[in-house]
Length: 141
Image 1 (cartoon, rainbow, N blue to C red):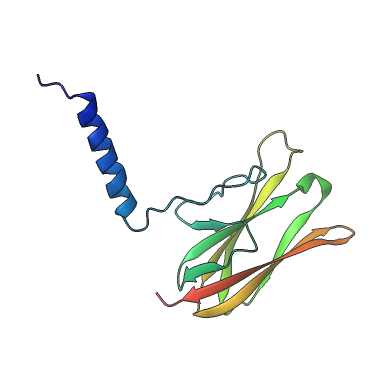
Image 2: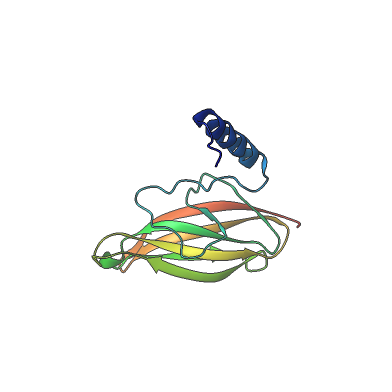
């Protein structure tokens, strides 16, 4: 049986890291802030920063996550141009205990090329608490 030296293993590991960096579409996902729980959908790009322009292709799905305090009766509502994008689903993701903060994730699908915005309004029974506007650029596939 032939043994492999530590130098050989290191060379192979470095070569694999280099090759992985060259593969398209293998960028790592952005790191979620501590206050957000992971999205319930896999294989979609996710966003949580309204200062970042979302770039999507026609037909592509993407998700936006927002910090939520449901125990206080607070919730997010999304307003958008329904000709440009469609809201596919939204889910509240929380872990026990039930009274801790949670994340509301909205899953959208890009329908048509162009630029648009999604306005999220954070509401309580007594009115609007906050608004966040996400800019979106939709490109032809």
